[in-house]
Amino acid sequence: MTKIRLGLIGDNIKASRAPALHRYCGEMTGLDVSYDLFIPKDMGLTFNEVFEHVRDAGLTGVNVTLPYKERVVAKVTVDDRDIARIGSVNTVKFPAEGPKGNNTDFTGFMSAWRHTFGTAEPGSVVMFGAGGVGKAIAFALKRLGAREIVFIEPDTTKARALIDNLNTGAGESVARAGTLADLSAADGVVNATPLGMVGYGGTPVPEGTFPTARWAFDAVYTPVDTPFKAQAEAAGAAFLSGYELYYFQGVDAFEIFTGVPVSDHDALRRRLAADTAPA
Image 1 (cartoon, one colour):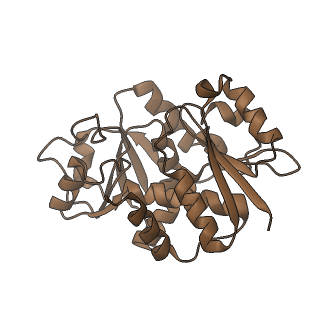
Image 2 (cartoon, rainbow, N blue to C red):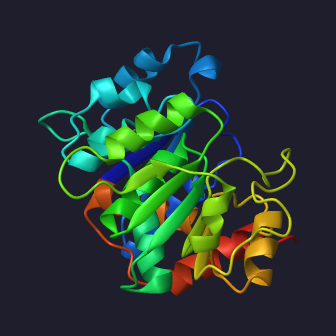
């Protein structure tokens, strides 16, 4: 059996669940998969040197996380037009013709959406945050057929750059800057900020202003139960957890690396849950 060697390049990754997810995917699909962590500062190397190391060492591919998702774009070929516009890559495969880049935050959000909401379209969306994972989510929402994406982002330069990027190319303009007043007409509300994450308190939606939206998504999943989630559920919105994005971006990456899809999602979820349960 051919050994499939995978890994993750990043700085703050010692607690990453990616190794477990990919190894379990390998066990479930009958593949011999290894998955190692590559932390440039711990290796005494630059990011460029680590990337060259994993490429030349014969790895099938690597995931790339903060702070290198944008830096790696210059080292890969990106075939998908929207991923190229996102300007961020988190999955790199090493075929003979050269490194290929993908963004499974983008594809993973679409997978999570379809798993939860089927063929429903997002409608009009208000998104808090316009950087990092928010870029991938925004392009995924556009691909899913969102009628409008309204950004509430204090960094107006960052917001304008993303809006212009989303409105470039095929299709009608879908993105614009907005204010809290736009919440009243929202079909969906997205938290793409760190608010609610361990170490960051609160929620981007002021208390008492969460709309009667159809759905809501929180990119935060540590913890899963966030103040934003509580607001959304109290308002009657169907809630999509950031854990679903974490899960599907990992499963999508595994299929990109190996060409083999994971078919038994229930079994994989049970395995991951058992692995993290307290003893």
